[in-house]
Structure formats: C-alpha cells, structure tokens
Amino acid sequence: MREQLELLWELQKIDLDLKSIKEEQDRYPKEIKKLDEKQNLEKERIQKERERIELLEKERRKKEGHLTLEQEKIKRAEGRMFEVKTNKEYQALLSEIDAIKEETSREEEEILQVMDEIDELKKDLLKREKEMAATLEKIEGERKVLQERMAQGDLIWKKQMERREVVSKQLESKLLKLYNTLKEKRQGVSVVSVKGETCQGCFVNVPPQMFIEVQKNNALIRCPNCNRILYWERDGKAK
Ligand SMILES: [Zn+2]
Image (spheres, rainbow, N blue to C red):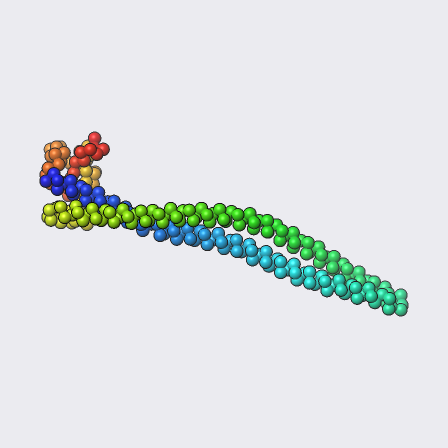
C-alpha cells in the first residue's frame, strides 16, 4: 500500500504541475497579444507626428508658391513705373506696390513661423523615434522571453505526460479510478498532505488517532471532511 500511496502522491503532484503549466501556456499568447498592441500604438503615435509634419510642409510649399507670384506682381508693377504719364497714375501704382509688398512681408512672416514649427516637430520626432526604437527593442525582448517560456512549458508538459502514463500504469485500477473521481469532484486535488493535524485540502483537523495512522503511510485513509486521500509527507515541510 505504501508504494501505491507514493504513486498516488506523485500522480497528484504531476497533475498539479500540468495544471499550472496549462494555465501559463494559456496566458502567454494573451501577453504576446498585449505586447503587439503596445507596439502598434507606439508606431501609430509616430505615424501621426510624421503626418503632421507632412501637412505643414505642404502648407509651407503652398505659401511659398503664392509668395513667388506676389513677388512677380511687384516686378511687373515696378516695370510699369516707367510707362506712367501722370502723377496720379504714378501715385496709384506706388500704393498698389506698397499693398502687395505688405502682403508679401506678411506671408514671409507666416512661412518663417511654419518653418519654425516644422523644426520643432522634427526635433520632437527624432527624440520620439529614438524612444520608440528603445521601446520596441524592449518589447521584442519580452516577446522572446515569453516564446522561450512557452517552448520550455511544452517540453515540461511532454515529460510530465510521459511520467504520468508510467505512474498511472503502476497504480491499481481501482485506486486510479478513485483518484480520477476525486479529482473531478474536488477541483483537481485528490491526494493531500497532512500538516500538523490538518488536512491540506480542506484545512479541517483530522482525528488524533487517524493522524497517527496517516503518518504510517501504509493504508488508504481519507479525510472525514473532504474525502480526499491523505498522505504523510515524510521529508516534506510537515512539522
Ligand atoms: Zn480534508
């Protein structure tokens, strides 16, 4: 019986291990997805800044084009200066030129402002791009760690499944059946240790006489409260 109890205990440990591996393996893809989202957000932010700069560049080119036209207008008006005959015409032409000049100088001012803004944004973008590169690198590192853990989890899973097969075969079929039934009814835990005099499955004390028997580990004893199979962990942390 002792050997059978030990096998049951081992089977229980394997199953708990498999359960936690499964939980972790389920979690990794979600974490990787979160990393993907973070990465995309980062890229989108930068893209928006680039678009803003492009828009301003376009605005600048448009203003410059307009400015060139205005400057040509001034040249033409100035050319006409030699053709005017009366003082009145001359005065009219002068004020026309002044008006255009006023407008061009306003436009030049605006172009300078846009260029300043572009410069600021470009500086900011450069900084952000560096930050993004660092962030992306960090995310890539995290992704790698997760992928390695997943691969490792798969490996341990396989090993434990093989061992489970061996242990299950060595168990008496009625014990295996009891184990499986309890496992299903008791949240995956069929075999528990006893610490002090307390069942580690339901944390209720077992009767003193039963506790003495449990420590011998040579009979199938079940917790009177939760029905689980009790096991005395010899070298364990049992006090
Ligand atoms: Zn119990």
